[in-house]
Structures are given as C-alpha cells and as structure tokens.
Image (cartoon, rainbow, N blue to C red; front, side, top):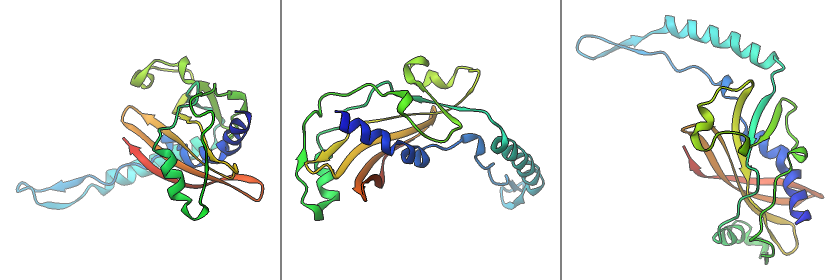
Length: 201
C-alpha cells in the first residue's frame, strides 16, 4: 500500500498539469451571427466581439498576475478500479507480456492532502468539506473553486514497472472529463505514458 501511495503522489504533479484548467482563462465565444429578415447570414457582430476580446485580454492579464490561490476539491479517498482495467493494462502494454499484481485491489486509502504537490497557486481541500453533488457549484466561497478531482487505486504488473489508474477533473455542473491513465517507470521515475478519455460532460 505504501508503494502504491508513493507512486500516486509522485505522478500527481504531472497529472494536475494535464487535468487542471483555470476556467477564468477561457476564451470568449466567437462573434454573434447577424441575419436579414429572410434569415440569411449577412455577417458577424465584429464590433461587440472586439470589445469582448479586449475586456477578456485585460482580465486575462489580471488573472495571470494575481496571487489568488485556486482551490481544488479532492476526493477524500481513492476509488476502486473496475475488473476490466486488468485487460486494458495488458492490452495497452501488450508488447511487455505483463503479469498483473492483483493484491490489495479491494482496499482504498485516504488521500493525504499534504502530500499533493502541484502548481503553487493551487490549494487542496477535501471534497467532504463542500456541499454534496452538483450543489458544490451553487455555493459562494471566500475563494475561487477551480475544480474537483480525485484518483483511483493503481493496478501494477508484478515487476512494478507499469500501471493503470483513473482520474478526472470537474469544472462545473455540466463540465468535466474522466480519464484512463497508463503509467510506467522510466529511468527510475514514474511518468504518465498516455491518458485516454473515457467520459466527458
């Protein structure tokens, strides 16, 4: 269990680099179309688009320069992997002829926030500190809730050189993505080899 946790915390910084996106930095929508009385497209509202873009660029500079710490709500404990992930791990690293280590797959563990390392602007709080379900996005906080995340247990091969886990990132009531993540040990360090989208909202 300690080995598994050490690997999870080792790859977490890279995982957050790939998962986290500050929604405040999202680009504004394209110019609104303009139609004539017969509903034929005659152009786009470029004046409003230019004004919106200028305002967004000013805000973008402010957000990048500010020292606000963005809060990520993290699942209190790891999730369990589904049984089919065994086949996915062997299939992905098919050229390695992996023999899987299936020990301790039925026991999750509490995620230790003090071991989660990432961008200094990110601060982590347990998901249990927030309202349940989508209500988390309906509350007002004294900080910017930048998203929700968590990760599963890791299934390794017997050499402990390859593994698979699940993670994802939620950015709103109808905004989020889940991933199947393949990891491997390379030059003594654990790296993310590939992330595959398995759910999106």
